[in-house]
Image 1 (spheres, rainbow over the protein chains, first blue to last red):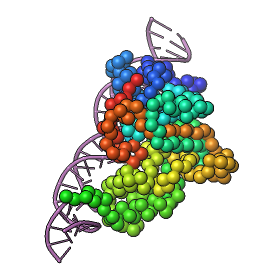
Image 2 (image 1 turned 90 degrees about the horizontal axis):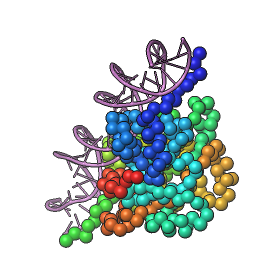
Image 3 (image 1 turned 60 degrees about the vertical axis):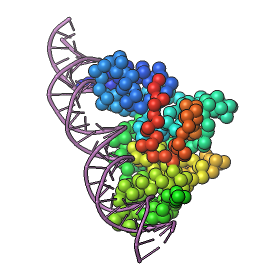
Image 4 (image 1 turned 180 degrees about the vertical axis):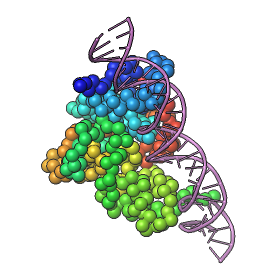
Length: 152
Length: 152
DNA sequence: GCTCTTATTGATAATAATTACTATTAATTT
DNA sequence: AAATTAATAGTAATTATTATCAATAAGAGC
């Protein structure tokens, strides 16, 4: 008879969220680790990964998977537009959709192209009863288990 | 006194390109490996990775980095729109920008949201003399070397 | 505040995707 | 056809991420 009070408020989790919310970049897990370490020197990288998973699953942060070999994280959960450097992998925001060209020019980037990607659930995944929330807020491990409808 | 005739036409490279061009999915390196193996059983996974690098660097194919833990590759190099499954990681195409809603409906996906990402070069990368072509067609290893302008 | 329960942690091992290495093979030039 | 050397197959190494597990500490109830 317990009302499933899961999510505990730990110093570590709070610190990670604070840092991510306070920063305008889109840091990787190890970048966050280095920053949070200044506040909690004994924190471990695994804890950072685990809390990033939880925060993403609960919708408090977003994963952005489009920048190099490492996952990046975004403290801003409102839908918005990214601009990514093909040289160093850095990702910046462009807030508004109107006057977009102007705002892009303001960033100083030399734009080579863009990609528009919709996300949701494919017919195969819709037809199977899938467990609770998936996708954006889901860990790679979980997602990997459903990679059967793959080839050709 | 050699005119740098690099790129050789190997059976392996040709087979990899053929398969990727003939397929409407956006396979991962190991998926391509399995398919190409039917034609060249002795091919190695490393060769697949290497040739995907070269083909992307020469602009004949595209990397798409937005689908789970593995890189995916696209034989279609014209700018176009993707739709990705949050359940299984599958990526499909949506060809036209007009009547987009209608075409999305045709895919049978349940759309949860979208991301619009521009790519190019950030001011920092523009100010340094960068080696030849970079970014989309570049290997992760190369790109990683320039990840200094990172934090906060 | 103190005790109990158990989610979370730190530390480390394991896994998965990708890249590097090296002797051998085979495309291209001559 | 012989010479040159980029590309290959096979394997080891690296890197990012996830799993494991004993120890810790957050929250509930007293």
